[in-house]
Length: 266
Image (cartoon, rainbow, N blue to C red; front, side, top):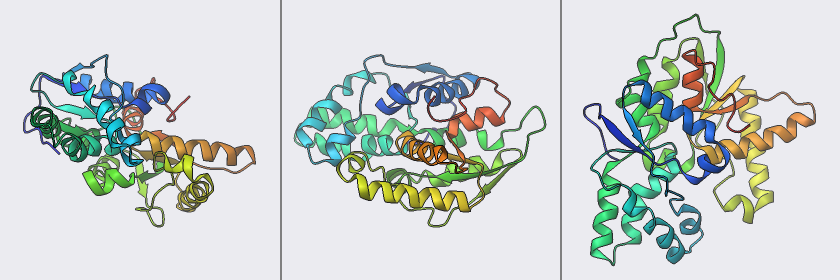
């Protein structure tokens, strides 16, 4: 993972296909916070997927083809902000491996990997949002943080995520039991093993409910969508469960932004 010593004038933003297709509000909120800091955001319009679904399913050739389509998008030597720990981990740790047998492409992948910074790290270390202060009195709320498996283990995203949450005015960060456990999404795992995935996500929702959280926050939209949709089914049966939202949206909301997304998808 790259680090950014000084606030850059411009950054690239790699939204991820999940944000683009199913959670655009999360991406717009992340971009808004970057722009609020006076940083220009460059959004390559030809971007698509990082290739992780194919890669984790064992289809390396297909993953390489998808990743190859992204390598030419980040030509300027600028940080690349990614609002997903798992996608950032794919770009940092696995893109160089995909192209190890092609020196030119391997160099391009390594260069990009060195410039990728996952959004929660960027928010804490560059935007200094761990010092966020609301302009008006903040309504007290209990919130839980979920960090995806890849984000936690490959990118250490739980550390800046917790710092950002603990700094928010009026927010009590509560921890669910077995916080490091998977929510059951796992990309294509949830499609291949729906019964196991469903049991896992319901265990996760049980632990979050029992923590007393009113809001569940994460920096990974795949996990958020998995938990959000499972929670919606349980709400239809009359159960009360926390609202589920991306960390960027929650940060803007707590700072007083009236247009911040209220949940991961609408």
